[in-house]
Length: 115
Length: 109
Image: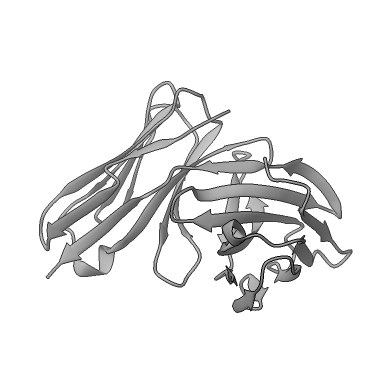
């Protein structure tokens, strides 16, 4: 079955602009998470959605927002871009093991460069 | 705040050598996972451990979860160039994973 699809793969923006990233999860997965990956901080949790509801949110400013649609596709938006927002943004959809542990399947990411 | 510390941060070895990567935390996690990430790609799950003291083997990779569920290790036997990548541990709780910063492994032929 198809994996997690993220678009666009690469994009360049300038400071002050906004950006919207899209994620299509694995068919049947209802949970979608977003992570920011930078060389200095590693992978940091942004937010998680399940059935269009945000269940958890990381420690990021309000400029970072997301949403999930009824078909489980998700988007995240970053407004008023700053240089420090340059990063690889990873989306993951998850399934739950019988043990209760969540298993994430990541997309290839969207590489954002802010100039 | 739950934190996961991985060591070493960088590791460069020759093909055929053995290595161990460590993942430590002061917090208890309900599960711990190991991922491998290659350049330009997202992380790929290697294993999930949920029981304290659990040991899982995946070909030449051996994963261990500490008895107190606060730490884990990944041991690779007879490393090969194809093992090169960023190895990440992640602890699960409350609908999110907390990741360590990773160990960048390079296996030279």
